[in-house]
Amino acid sequence: MYETDADDISYLPRYTLLRLSALTCIACGYYDDHPRAVLATRVIILVVCYILRFSAFVISAVCANRYPPRGIAFAVFAGLSLVPSAITIFLEYNHYRRLWNYFPDDDPKAKRDERHKHFVPSSLINDQRTSSWGGSLCKNDKYCRSRNLLHVLMYHSGSKQYRRDDGTMIGFHQTAPNSAIEISKGGFTIPTKKGMLGAGTYFATCIDHTQFKAVHYGTYICALVDPGSELYVTTSRKDKKAIEENYGTTVYFQHRKNKDEFCVREDDQIKEWIMVVDQDETRKGENDGDPKDTIKDRFYADVYVGCIF
Image 1 (cartoon, rainbow, N blue to C red):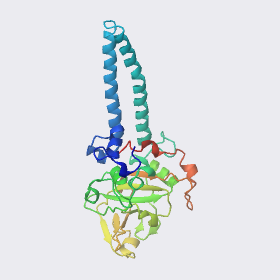
Image 2 (image 1 turned 180 degrees about the vertical axis):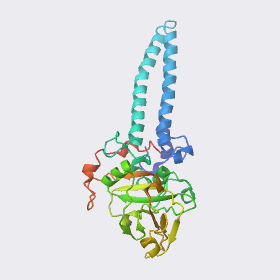
Image 3 (image 1 turned 45 degrees about the vertical axis):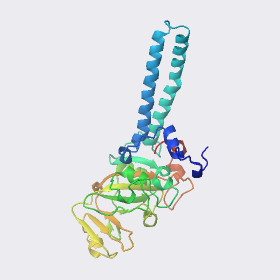
Image 4 (image 1 turned 180 degrees about the horizontal axis):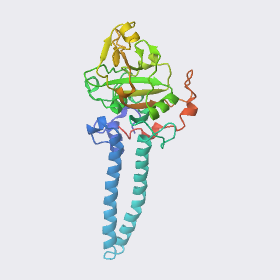
C-alpha cells in the first residue's frame, strides 16, 4: 500500500500507521532518555488486553449454561483466543530481554564492571537509522541538553560534539571488540605510555572523530566522565606541562578545527559507559583480533524495525 513516501495518504501517513500497528503510537518525553521503556510499554499493553480477554472468558463461562448454545460457543472462542495472546506476550517479553540484555560474547553470566551499562548493536544507533548524513532523530537536535548515554547514541548523529562544561563530560573511545569485552569486565586500564597529552585514556568529543584518533577499531565506547578537580585546557599539541608533568587530573585539548579531545588520568573518573558493537564479520584491523571469535552472538536488528521508536 505504501511503497514510497509519495504514496502517503494525507490523513494517514505511513509512519503513523506503522506506529499504530506496532503499539508505539504513545508519544512520551520519558522515552527520549529511556528508550527501553518503549518495548516495556508494548508488553504492558498486551498484558492489559490479555486480562480483558480473560475477563470476557470468565464471564462467558459463568453465563454459558444460561444462554446455550451461543453462550457455550462464545466461551469456547474466548478461551481459545487466550492462547495466541499468551504466545504474543511471551514473544514480546523475550524481544525486550534480547534487546536490553545483549552480550556479544554470549556470556550473560560473566561478572561485569558496575559502571558498564549496556552493549548496543551498531545497527541501532542514530546514524544507522537515518537516511541523511548528520541527521538526528531527536526533535530538539542541537538544542538538546540530555546527558543520557543511550539518548546520545540512539537519537543523535555521530558528528555531534559534546564539549566540556562545568559538570561531567561525555567522551567517545574506540577500541577492538576483544579489548572492549575485557573493559566491560574490569574497567579501563590507564596506560603508562605517554601520548600527545601525557599518559591516560583518551576520549574524543564525538563518535566520528574516533575514526582517526583510535589505534584499534570495532567497538565505540560512550562514557560519562568526571573531569576531576584539575581540568587543564590547552590549545597546543606540544604542551610540556601536560606531557612531561602529567599536569591535572584531566587534560582537555581544544583543537582549532573543532576536533577536541581529552585525556583522563584515573580510571575512577570514568563513571559509566555504553558500548556500541560493530557486527561486521569482515572487519579486522591489526592486533584487533578476529571479530568472528570475539562476537559470538549476532544481533539482527531487522526484527525490531518500527517496533522500538
